[in-house]
Length: 240
Length: 272
Image 1: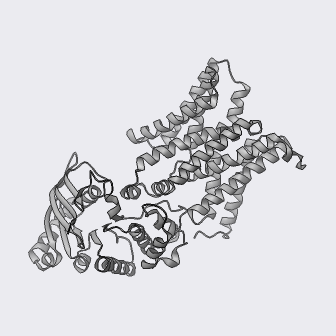
Image 2: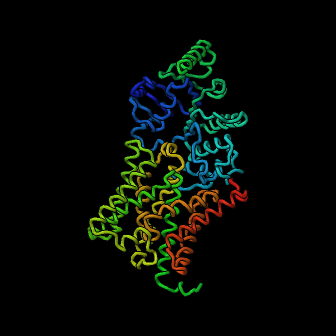
Image 3: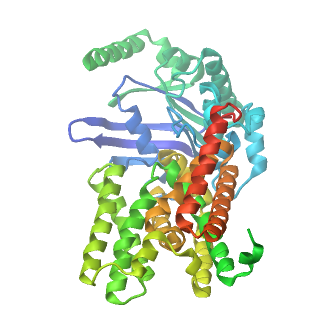
């Protein structure tokens, strides 16, 4: 089976700082990968590089064995959920308008309906997006990311500023997408407990990759967790 | 009011050309307003004034030179904005004043203001010829067709550039295309309300429609309806009372906006 993602020797240098230093790892199809790391660890840089927003890296990133710098179609395989659903608050669009934007080709109303049902947004379909709660908006953006049937879902620290009930619903949806539909999930998070509960693989990033493997291994190894927490703490102190 | 005016050929041409321009400006303006480019139309119109002066001076059909100058200005403003990191409103101010300044200098070279110049500044919808009307309808049709074909891409990059990019949309190309189309729209619309009032057609019906519409398409249709209504009513009323059509059209659309704001603040219009 093809690997979903293959990152080899990825290095990103900014004028003042090396954001990612020789990072290599493989994400297999069906993995639920939690990417953890302190602020400034390079998670956003890694995501921007994978999403084609940052092209000034050395090394290679492959999706399904295709180098993303050479591929014109790899966007088809990705659904992306941003950290904050940013848009003009008075943007005149309904929930189904926004979900429809995620379609890659011609309009497919059946698929839009299906995904709205799946994410329990059906009753909100004609609601203007500016009038939704944080949790509802988050589901709309997941629906938009899923409507073109991607094989990989990439989520950038998605549960900030959302109430606990919505977070639980959101986690339930992710779990189902991964286990029932076999969608590979790449999810960056600050929340170690949530990663422990949901992800089957963990990548620990702090400019270099200091752990990548099964999450059980990571969380059952007290030394590793301690090491990680200390690194985060140091980074935290450093930032203040 | 006599219905006799509806039998005049110039009135038919004015209403047809005016309505088509109203629809075009509504569609283009909605994207510009949502991209926070509300004054962009104004800047392009002012820069095309320089183009008009150049055409009159050189003895070329002024709208052709206006098209050229407007497109070049649109591209320059976009490039300057990204390259030198100048804010949108400042770059619009630069473009707007340079267009007028260049226009004034060229006009003074060619012996001062003429009737032609005034008709471009304030519009001359009652004077459009059959050829003008055909040209306006054809060009507006072509621009609207391009927008329709790329509707999802333009809408998504207006909604959120970063996410549009991630989904594989060539956002930079779309932005340039939209701006060139805006330049073409502005010059095509000059004959209706003139250089000075074009941005009103881009902005006012859309600001109004955003308060009513729920979905994007609904908002666009509402904006078009308000715009066409203002144009047709403005043309007829101005003729009857012998006042300027451009000013009357814009005041009509301002009145609709004012009424809408009144309805909204009375709580009759819900946001969702």
